[in-house]
Length: 265
DNA sequence: AATATTGTTCAGCA
DNA sequence: GTGCTGAACAATAT
Image (cartoon, rainbow, N blue to C red; front, side, top):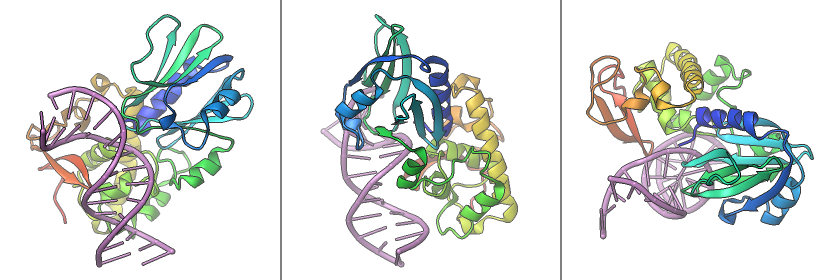
């Protein structure tokens, strides 16, 4: 379930593996994942070029090549990247395979094909077209921006946090995590949040995602009082001795503590 | 065999 | 038109 932290980790991975290397072959193994770009165009644009830098907005990863084409990847629910040496086995559900001149390859694997492979020449245009809100971890995304977006919404906080058109990057798992640390019930209406709670949500949100990224989203590296490793109904809350409950909220299975996330409806 | 999983999209409702 | 909810979809594991 790649959300902002996961995609940021993929971005750094790509930075440390696949940059400045000449691409000598591109294999689109599943055209289902392609957006508007054709398989032929993708190959023509990337072949012979090299990736020079990367970027990320919400759950989208961008890799810019030296001919100014930009490869866009979205990881859906099951996507990941793997850089590996020739001869080693490629991941089982590789949908896009890029071979470099140095004998290594980069695989984009996406078992359940909910991801996206696209080629654009302008990230800003792409972000606008997708109608994505500001990236939650962008330094220019301030508490005042967050407050403005949350205020005046009719639905629950959880659906606001998860709505990519409101702000980009937070999904089911991290919306639960943020609300857990903020002590706010996921079903709380935005209109019922106090000014202080909204500010607190922003601060905690930044903190939670930052910690997830620095833990490289590896479960064993997360602090033990995080909900993420305790997503099991009717188990003990790692913070207060309450009970972790599971309920469908905003159409998603949500986990929360029945004791320290007070229920306001 | 039916169910659960999640991000996105879209039909439909207030 | 807007904001929101809920269903559908993909592919697989249990």
